[in-house]
Amino acid sequence: MEKIQRWVEKIHERRIEKQYDAIILVIAEEGDGKSTLMNQLTWLWQDVRGLDPTPESVLDRVVWGERDEFKRTMATAPERSAIPVMDAARALYKRDAMDSEQKDAEKDLLDVRTSEYFIMLGYQGYDDIPTTLAKRRALAALKIPRNQRGKLRGYSRESLDEKWETGEWPEPDMRDSFPSLEGTELWEVFKRRDKKKKNERIDPDDDEDESELDLDPRELAQEIVDEGIGRVVSIHGGNKQPYIASELIEVHYGASMRNAKKVKLILENRPDVDLERFAEEA
Image (cartoon, rainbow, N blue to C red; front, side, top):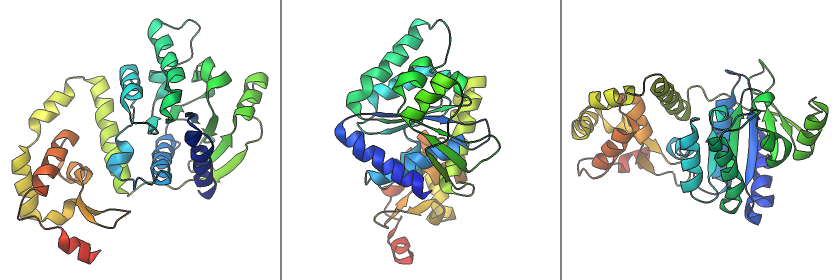
């Protein structure tokens, strides 16, 4: 993954620090690793910016696909944020006659140049990509060959122009590989949120039902203390200090992220919760 890391560093240096944004197309069939790659790119981006990424920070700006969510994120995300749009075809898609909302969404992409975002748009196929992006607006594309999870091909703007003109993919400008996230805290939290978002699309009332089933935050905090705080403690990758991770509360106790954050706050303010011993163990 060394080539990808250097590529991300160059984008930050050559585009973002010069006050341009960067829109990257991430193209892969369902199940070939598109989400894995986009999560890793977000992690790398935050690391390049010196932000000490955590699972929570990586997933904080994920757009799960709906157009309203996409537009809201574009309007509110801090400058230089990484914004992964996992299913971009739900927000921006290719069609002969665009409706007014589609036009507004594409206009938003033109208006974000001053925000210096690193935007990843995930598509299952090249033919799903809107003309504006394919022909002009996208800076580059990362393509995972079919049934070759963990492998990728990188294409510059010039190569995308060639693809547009000839209809065929040229030789890639970059070849690299990326590891699986299976078994990591980041992937466990991502899978849970991804499943929840998909369920919400099927049954919009499902989120309300789940919230009603959540334990009271104070009761859950007490349960965590009784079982041992270690299950929800993580070590910060940068300063090596222990902290209570809301993602682990979500994973281990089935809490919604909203409730997990409340529980985290309660635990942090309890006098009987001591994180110092975890610092010594680290």
